[in-house]
Image (tube, rainbow, N blue to C red; front, side):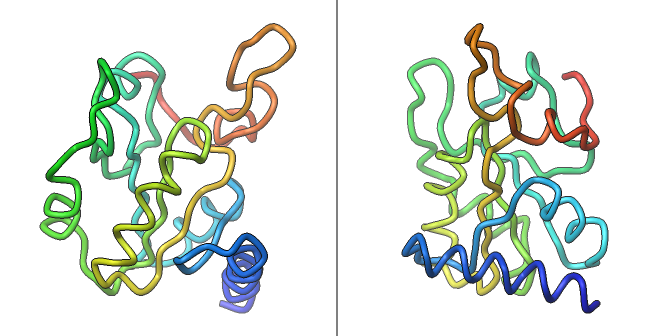
Amino acid sequence: MGKINELLAKAKQRAQQLGLPYSGALTPPEANEIWQSLDNAVMVDVRSAAEWQFVGTVPGALCIEFKSYPGMVPNPHFKEQLQKQVDKEAVLMFLCRSGARSDDAARPAAEAGYSSVYNVLEGFEGDKDAQSHRGTVCGWKAHGLPWEQG
């Protein structure tokens, strides 16, 4: 439990440095370690259904769209869907493609009363490489963490 507490403290420090209104920011390996170690940890993939289907998913992650394809239209039921599926006491980690949408999703979760809310930095695919491809420079996939094709 000492290592997990260290990771959560590091995430909290990042949140303070970045001025985040939620608990913290985790790297993909940190998020995976916490998720595998804590019974009350929940990974919420907020990408679109198209991304889950065509790009891949993290096995066992809860999938709730924050924005829907096409047009990336905000999901008006996001908070309601989250509250129906995730206990307020959970250690809640949000994942998207690059870390931006998950930041956007973490904010209303914290406002809704979730006390342990974290953004997974870099996201599932991370930044683009020199050839404009994602999934090779950083992100969940580039770190070699568990994922499966949709």
